[in-house]
Image 1: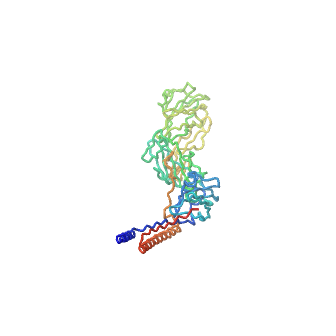
Image 2: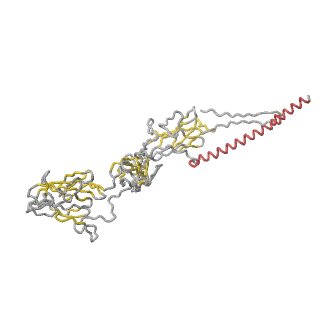
Image 3: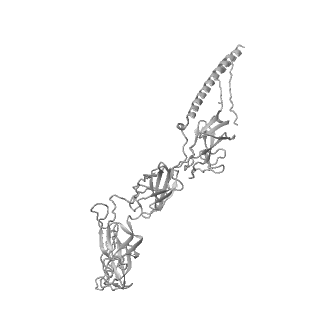
Length: 525
């Protein structure tokens, strides 16, 4: 009997030493009110889809059948009940117009949205739609877009240094009263907001990559509108006079590009030629004075030209097959029509344009082009009578010289030889013909140097924005977090007291008692 009693007492003592287990299932915390903020709609701007991450909730897709064609990061923008902005498009808000923003929210951890929860978005009272299946809610409000009152940029007109074989691209900054070129987003090899792209490889090249023969390039400018200005869907673009592609990222940013630029040889094109020769006159021999201009000169020895016909690149024909041979004593006959032909070769740094035009003694001339870059120009002139006397015209001018010609329509002979302009009194006018001479340093064409672009090269990064951090939370959210921490600490202290009380009760009763306090989570509505 004593042994049995002792065994019972030992058993009771051991049971008292066994730790008491207390299990708590914390009560779900209800979210009764939400104050949400989104980037307000503004004229010319695209919808923002910044993810919302608050205390006890966050925005997300994939819930309640939410479509990623409409939602991004759990946020959708509607133009009307049935029309929406599709994330990733270039559509922008109009001014002074109402739009609906919907936010799909999911509760975090031990939180739940109260059935009578209220919410505001940007201070506007929002509607709340609950989804019982997963506890999420959709919060929606109507917001009115703000008109920016900025002046629209109607046209962007740019000039770039044309690519030249063997030369490297230049990246000159554009800075006007309306916009400036500067890098934005993630773009490789972009300098001063300019890129040059090899269209074949799709790679943006640098100042270390010379242009290659037979390769097409694209130049792109990344432009930022200055204060008081904006880009819109009507903004046009031109580069070197050619229509450029304009892609408006938002009201502040636009990309202007020109494709299919083929590097040239760097030579200046001569688009027009104007030459005067001594007109044929009865009893006189043909004149073979060499033509020697700034951009070209006349010469033999090209295109199979025969010195039996040409001298200094000039020939006089009596008919298609008959000519006056240089060095003979043959002279012109009165009233007879002659054809003068002149073989011209471009000087270093110049070349004749494919569609070069020409005039000879003021008459439109026929132009024949050759593979070696030279041209032949020809025109028919009627021989003047011996009695013909020249009548001087007023001064004829170009940017370098002045001269006079005979005003007789069948003549056109230069009566006062070409002479360079002079400005001894420094009034920026020729002292002889009063031609306006540009001041030194004046630049009527201010070429803007180019940069690489992208064929589908890298463009400003439009990837999803990251979740907001604690520094972006409102003061109210911070206060809520502090109160939440206090409440959690209070629960922990209460649990410890219960454990101590339970242990005391066990010792007094002389038995092992396990308290399991279950606080079931409230059913969702």
